Image (cartoon, rainbow, N blue to C red):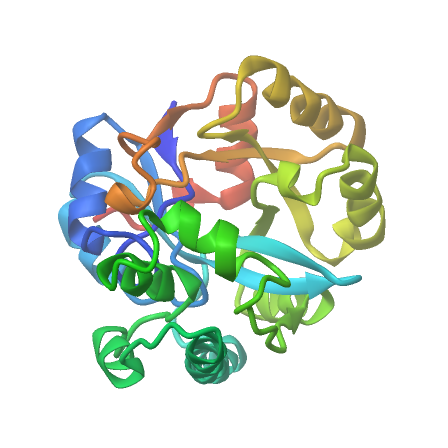
Length: 279
């Protein structure tokens, strides 16, 4: 089965509109699709309209914190009118905008002056983040690339990075359950330790952390096998996605990946997609 369960649009840090991301995925033959922009559910309706005949889920990638580490929680099948989650996301959006201001102030202290108000205008109505500052640094010729912006200034605990109060993993899982979502850990390699990932599931699998993104777009075969073995050992649902961002992540050329049996059958059952209305 071809699917796309991890991709981004201009509603967060992608370079293409939600409808265009969905349309590109459709051209590759996806049967199952979910736009997972950071900390926002915006864009879902546009993806449904762009993918007639395809099962489209409402979802997002929620940024959480656990034991000092950032955890990206993929949520699938969020019910409309998920009050507590919707309210919390409004607060996250404002926290991100305040953080952006603080990062720009830090850069000014380092002798790099950016137009904060212009950046905020450009991010109005969507999730603002460090990639927006990185693009502004490139435009100002302070760096040559977004990669350089992160390596020199914006990486975690970097000279211009500013921490902000992320949702705890426990709260994120609680919000997801209340919203009727199924939840999976995005790109598990970012925790840098398979033992830490396994411990995370031992603590939180019963709280709704039931999926693992073993089929992440840039994983080579050996990397996939690490997480596929863990999925088998811990009875986790295998999920997958390309993490497509368009020009913002040019190494991922198009959305969509292949998920083979028996993982495809189990994923569909877990998501209840036969009960999901098709566009």
